[in-house]
Length: 581
Image (tube, rainbow, N blue to C red):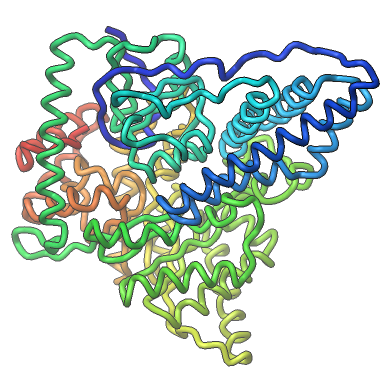
C-alpha cells in the first residue's frame, strides 16, 4: 500500500480500478523536409487545425448543454490559440524557413510557449500551460495519424490517472465511467480543477509522481476531500473507506431531504447560509442546495474564461441575470481579484512575486478604467435586486476611501444618465490580509460589511501558498494565529454594528462551524454542495455550547491539538457525518 499526498480540488471519494492515460508526453523527433514538400506540410498543418477546431467546437457544444455557456467558454482559450495569427505564423515559419516537418514545428513551437508559461511565478499563468499542451496533443494526434486516447470504450467505472489532463479532456469525460481522477501537475486555479468541481468528480492534483506509481487495473482510493491517493490499499483501509462511502451516501441523502429547512440553532439563533459562485449558471444549483443567496460572486472568471477584459454590458448582463434568478435574495459581487500579470502584457507589469504585488484593489487603483466600468455594471444591476459590492484585498483605510470615492462618482454619472440603481447599495470589504484584520475597528467605521476570506488570510498569515504542492501541507486554517485574527475581526464588526460573513473554504468545512458560531459568526458563504451539511450542523447545536468550543480553541497552542479537539466535538453531534477531516 502506498499513500500519495497532493492538492484536493474537487471533493468526494472513489474506490476502484485505475485507468492510466499514457502516451501524452511522446517526444517528436526533429525531422527536416525537402523544399518541394513545404506546401504539402503547410496543407497538413492547416487540415489539422480545421479538424481540431471541429473537435473543440463539438466538445464545447456538449459542455454548454451540460454545464452552461460560461464553463464551456473555458475551451475558447484553445480555440483562440488555434486561431491566433502570430502563433500560426511562427509554426508556418518553421515549416517554410527551417524546413521542419509540420508535427515538429507544432511540437516545438507549442512546447516552448507552454514551458514559458509554466515557468511563471504566478500560479494562475503557470496552470494555463496545460491548455497549450492539450492543444498540442490534439494537433499531433492528427498529424501523426494517432488516435486520441479513447476513454469512450471503458466497460466499468474507473479512476483516471495521468501526468496531466487538459481542459478539453476533462470537459469530455464520460461521468458514467470516469468517476475520479488524479494527476501529477496542476493546482486549485487550473481550468481542469474548475471543470472537475463543476462536474462533481472527486479529483486530486499536484501529486508529482502518481502517473509513474500507478498502473492500469490497480485498485486505488481517490480521496478528494483530503487530497490523498492510496495505491493498492490493504483490506483494513478498503473497509474503512467503504464504510465512509456508505455513511457519506446515507448522510448526503438525508441532507438533501432537509436542505430547505432553516439554519437555526437549537436555542433559536438564525444563521444565514449563502453560496460562492463563479458563473451565473451556478445560481440555480445553489438554490437547489438550499442557499439563501450568493455571498460571493467571483467575477474574475468572466475574464479568465476568455482572456479578454469584459465590457460594461458583458458585466451587466451576467449580474442582471444572476440578480433576477435570485429573486430578491442577496447577490454579493466581488470586484476583479486578479494580478496585473494576468490582465496586462508581462512586459508591462513584470513582478518577481505577483502574490505580493499589483493585484486586486491595487490593480484597480493603478488602472481604474476597468474598475469603473465594472462598478457601473454592478450599480446598474443593483436596480434588479439585492446587490452588494465587495472590494478584495483591502489592506488599509486609504484603499477603502479611494474605492468609495469612485463609487460615488459612478453614482453621479448614472444619475445624470438617468440610469436606475440602488443609491443605498452596500459596500463591503474582504478581510484577507493580516493588516486588514488588525485594523478591522478602523475599517468597520467606513464600510457596510466584512467578508472574511480565509483562503488568502491563512496564506498571508502563515506565509504558505496553498497552491504549491511542496508546502501545501503547512497550510492550515486551524492555526492559533488565524483564530485570533478571526475573533478580532468579528468583534470589530459587532462593535460597529455591521454585517460579517466568512466566504473562504474554512466556512464550508463543518469541523469549524461550532467555534465560528461561538465567536459570533452568523453568516456563511460556501460552495453550494456543502450547504446542506453545514445547515445540519447548525441545527444540531446550541450557541452556548458553541461558545464553549470557541473558548477552548482560543486557549489551545498547537494546531494539531485544535484539529483533534474539533474532530471529536463534531463527531459527538454528527456521528454519521463524513467531513470530519
